[in-house]
Length: 278
Image 1 (cartoon, rainbow, N blue to C red):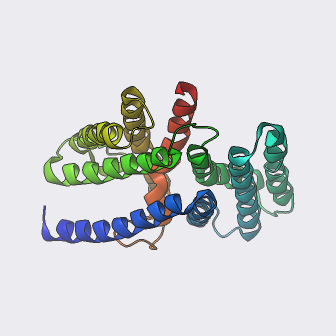
Image 2 (cartoon, rainbow, N blue to C red):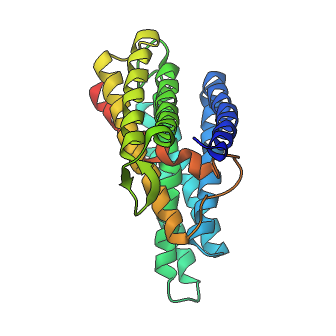
Image 3 (cartoon, rainbow, N blue to C red):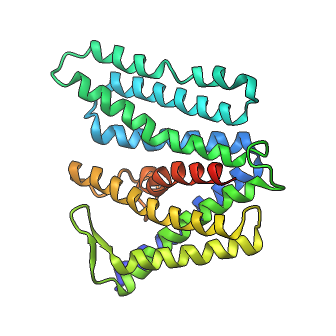
């Protein structure tokens, strides 16, 4: 590890620690605080994504942002609602599709539908997974003593995989994993991240409980694998745009989208598994 890599690791560690404490505070403060924090993170991620893919199309930017907010609020309120209110909560998301397509009708360019597709896909990609995380914070869905521990455990698994894959990769990584999209990722770093994430899952079972050992271990494995693909997917977006980071809000990490890339693909898979296995 050279001096530049050591400096970057220190910067990443400081930023990551502050970021982690903010997430932990949101979880402990209550479901509404966490929901608001994830909405903010999702909107910042979507803002960065739209800067990359929409090329300054302000109409589609605002239409997509509105669609994303509707999607997020719908899923979040569904997680908090009782059975009788579920369809009403779902209905909040439905105007998102026509809003984006109607906006596209007023564009005077040859790629109006392409921009509409990018706007809507971006809204789903950035906000839908973060809205799903609110499900893990609901005691009526996960009837355990402290469902917040499941939510916190998921973030700890994501952070463990990200941190240990990075450290292992820059320390002993030699064999490229997916050079076309992420030249610095290695097989050694990937396997290191998975192994340490499984260890973290075992520790969560020992100290957090709430789930069975099998559930924690499967959650750890799913988080590591889908988190890797989340990282690669965002790298693909950035390479197509020929940029290094999605933004510069988080020193050592880049933008908010850079920090949440693994979470955005891991959350739907993990939430689906936990619902089906409970």
